[in-house]
Image (cartoon, rainbow, N blue to C red; front, side):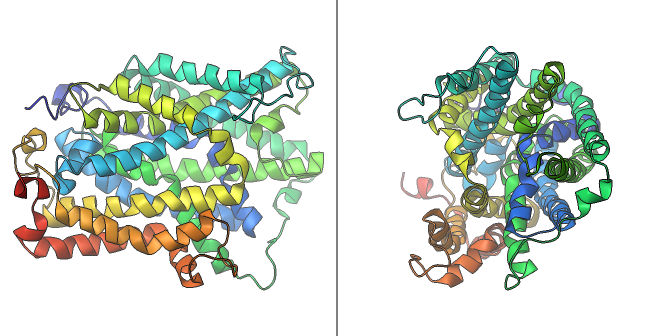
Length: 488
């Protein structure tokens, strides 16, 4: 096995180290799904004009849809014991695999920053509750950053906690998820119970109707929200082999994901809706941010305990969802020099540099530019890998050649690269309209038909990529071969 393409973190996991059961995978998903972005997920849907039950069903359907590529891509991880960047070498080539690995890694860096910012906000609220920080004096914003010194220091403090854990390796993340899962479920149930008993009439929590204008149809709201929901876990649908490689059987990885993903996402989104409904009754306005809500609960002890729960939820999500995948991706760039730990440090550094507090400033921008935008990129990657592994290769890979720079997967696969580019292109105009805020206006850069396509970005990308990749593979060695070999 060549050291050019392997290190202890990227090498296949031997059978005696595959110790994860379906309950570990389920706990992993509970730990990842119970987080503030999940809690706030329905906010954008309700703000767009959905009722509470329409938002809950959209979350459930979106997660059932994304579960399919999740289990499909997880299959190769369990069968061969290898992580996502190594599996991508089969379809994209040993050099071409850097493209999907880096596409996933950069997106995860953004998510890492967002989650770390949320955790830092929880620490800030704890310090305010304990009167260690006074918002009245911590008002001056730092140049360039646009946040106060106190907010920035809390953000960095939570960032350091992540580093302290990742340096101990993947096993520490496994145990964190296993112990955090039951605690996080209990916290969700406690929040739900509080909401129901805090109001005089629980029926008020379900009374709100749709807020969209009469001339706006449900379906025009539903499809972009569904695409955004699928995009929520588009990153993990690619890199789930980073975890399923430690599973004993295919049943463990599939059943574990089925138990942990759709149920937890739906339940915790429902908790967010009901608890926010209670805030309307109690405080006269909808408070979607649980950190802000907890700070209003009065008792310093309750506030600190509740915010500590927020910290654990955010930490368990961030480590599993937004550190492991990009760390392996960066390691794949140069296995001899970049280990899993080095890759994690790179991830954490980029997560600071993107200034994640700016990404969270507007819910519509968060959904239409961030979530849908990267689903337009990651959907085609998933389509290509699923087509290659299940349809073209019938789940049969040459495991040794995945690590051979001169082997059958060497170089860059033209078929995969061309399918990726052509599958992303239809969504680019709609993305640019959304990113510039001109979609649906006379000032739009591109015609409105592209906005309609962009609404279905993930679905368009994954379907088109599967079809194009299959066609290109049928055209023979000239299309399916490697540009690197041809030009040596």
